[in-house]
Amino acid sequence: MTTDFSKKIEILGDFYTQFRDNEKMKEFIEFNDVGLPLAYLTAEGLCEITEDGKKYVAETWDLFLGIIGIKDTGFEHITEIWAAGEDTP
Image (cartoon, rainbow, N blue to C red; front, side):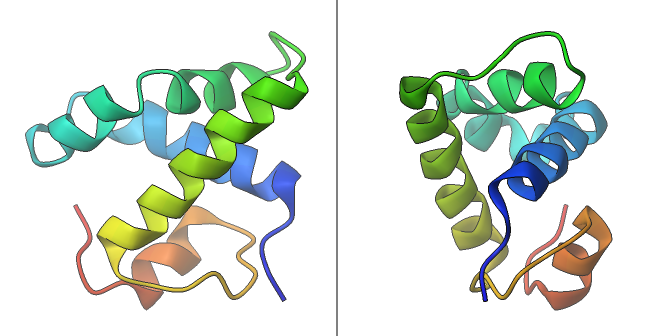
């Protein structure tokens, strides 16, 4: 089981709002300067994501799990990721 795309949007949007000014995550946030804001805007209902946009979000999701050091097992909320992770901000 992997995380539903709508949950990826929600979790990345939550991450972006909570950590966009976090110095420890600065490099990750700068590198994902399209995927993270796009996830946030989509989660907030401020835009509709295109197929190209979905690719950015999917790449950002994979990188996000990579920096945390976990595999996608089907997450519902960002707190589950922090609980499972090796390296949390």
